Image (tube, rainbow, N blue to C red; front, side, top):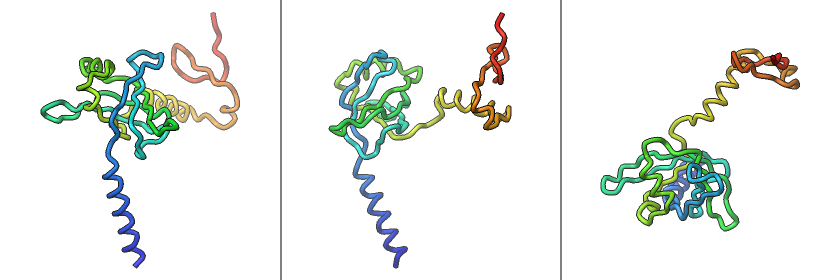
Length: 166
């Protein structure tokens, strides 16, 4: 009996999620970093939370094919529930689409789709992972973590003491 109740509750939640849909983009704002890294303003949605990684797609007219054009992160949910998404960077090869989106062309904004997902690691994620892996490979212990760690500019290795300067 409990299993049936749990399954019914899960089906109800899935149905509710399908009804939510993805919020449309209302506006594109240059918040001081230029249109290379604008903020997209989305309608309210329960699918997003602060810090959620997102993928930005552009749906081509006619074919309906969705092209991945950017990655970003939800910066904040405003008091009026609008969602601010900060674009980390546009993917190369989409310059015409980016220009249309950033200029808020009437035909472009309805074709922008923001999903709470990331299709691959971003370069920043890979850089962080590389540093963590190197620290682990050098067997940095708790003692070391309480002291400053320097990086040798030539070899790229982490050092326990500040490198000598000429």
